Amino acid sequence: MGSNTVHLLVVDAHPGARPLPAHSHKAELRLAELLDEDGAIGPDGVNRLVATITDALQAAEDKGCEDVLPFATSAVREASNADQVLARVRDETGIDLAVLSGAEEARLTFLAARRWFGWSAGRLLVLDIGGGSLEIAYGMDEEPDAAVSLPLGAGRLTAGWLPGDLPDPAEVRALRRHVRARIARSVGEFTRLGRPDHVVATSKTFKQLARIAGAARSTDGLYVQRGLTRKALEEWVPKLATMTTEQRCGLPGVSEGRAQQLLAGALVAEGAMDLFGVDELEICPWALREGVILRRLDHLPAERAALG
Image (tube, rainbow, N blue to C red):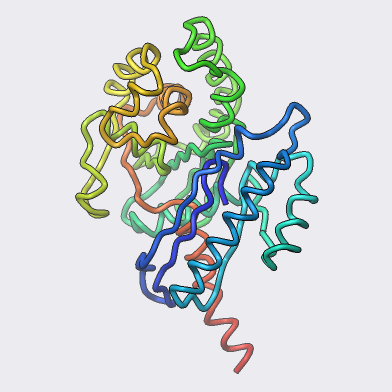
């Protein structure tokens, strides 16, 4: 359960093999935009969340799932009424949502990227823009040497800084300054570790930015190499800043639910690439969900041995 969507990913998975997607059930809630001025998820948001989880559980049952790994990210983690929301979900659905910390999000996303690209990829710098936060992780192994989560999600920033349909230029400049100042505080923690061999980006935001910049469509398959250059991104940011949400919806690969957030996400991506000195990055089709699944699969042999 992310800040933008509740997503059930059904996979055929067992230790020693890659998880194969079998079914996807997704509903857009954009919880990051439904927080009230006290930082709480309002009654309507909680009701929609419970209903969506109920639907997802039914879909999981219909598909014959043997195990469910439910987790929530920053929208619930940072809500002032998180405990009440979790209790309501548990009481009405029977599901205990595991709330991941920001550092856990970054580490699990890094694990997914490492498994996708393999050991030969060397030192990875992984960037993930979600609805509520930006995760950054760096390392040589499956566990990153450095990992941070910053409150720079595309949904959060859109709701707080770019509330109108057609962005005000002064608001865009203010958000750009805010994003870069926040990222700059963390850059030294990573650059002291040396230059990465590969810079990798995950998440819907990066995928959509790569698509409008000319990358292959999602329908072309997981194994088509996709990338995004800083030059292309710098050309697109001013264009996005002059477009309405409806106009952004007409761009290739941009979904209606994400169109309003695309400018904020682009400003975060541009700031991160600039401050980390990244000219080009590679898009990884695996992200947090796959990281959670992979970590679970890693633990299965030990659990079975303990039982048997």
